[in-house]
Length: 480
Image 1: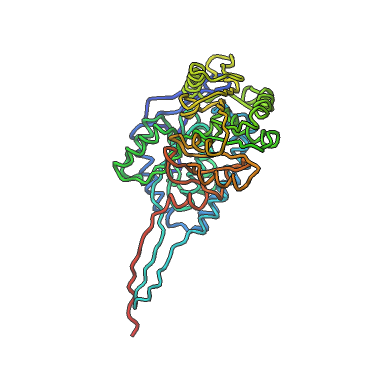
Image 2: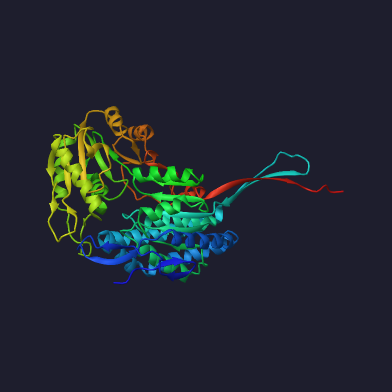
């Protein structure tokens, strides 16, 4: 089995590293590819290429940049089935979900292509004779994007789209468990007309990522991953005063108030708990359910969860596949064991589904009688596990919901719109959904409070993360 190449300055080359990493299909346990664990020499090549690419790209007219990004989006749609297959094989995501991720990624590129045309500055009109004060926005420079395995193309496009639209060059270091789709995206951008050096791709583990974060010529780090690693990234980046945006973990609460009809919200709710096998940062981890609807909600929840189809990612109509790799699996199982030991009531699931060796299927799992001493209520459980507490008032639910170091997203269901808005204002979360869980729209900012990170992705606010503000004092010649 050949080792994957890396993309440096428009060419597919071999890494100089002798270390290799096996990439597994989590549905079957088989090794499906090998990637190089890129070293300092590889990183240096990528950075030098990106510096050259940046000089050309920042001077390229925004309209031309937009056209190339649109070209890439169209190519993604043309190759959507192949890209979805790569996501599914490496991540274990059911094919139908992988296809949605791919199509949404094309939409992100189209959005940023157009939003890049609307970057604007200011001219202050103080009426000083022969003087003008301009505020302009410059691209920040070379950006390194370090992304997680759970949404391998979407998380990359959120960063890459904004970087390219603003005139930055970009080095991608995808998670070592799901690299293939990033490499394929590199091929499509070359086909779309992107010049050499503007998009480079290397592979490797955290050591490779650290080399990027510590490099003095990289101007910004865009990172998605765990809180623990995000803190290390921020600390390392401080050594060279890099710009950093961190999209970290979540332990997201849902509040279901009295008067809510469980039947109307259950499809939404279950999807946000178990989609992607629970491997997404703004999934519902914990639910606070009002006592008046508690029993009806639990009954219907268990009825619907029992109908979820569990299987390999390539099987038709699968709702839940395996977890991506052993580290995630072990963490989820430890949280289940902790909940059992501390007295939570297991309503369904809670066990590994035995399959081939080195595959990581866990039953959809629901606990009630949970409390905040338990890991399932305090730490991010990155798997198909829901924990539930009974509450009697909104104030009680808000108190519990905010009792967390995380603040990424929250969800509120109530027939009283005023109560829903009141809850949204009080919840310490970067995003709040009230009464319906839409997809996170491209035009709306996404990001968290507290230890869920800082900075925003998507939307015009996401563009600002890749721009520096420059003030220009212009003295005009006196007209005789």
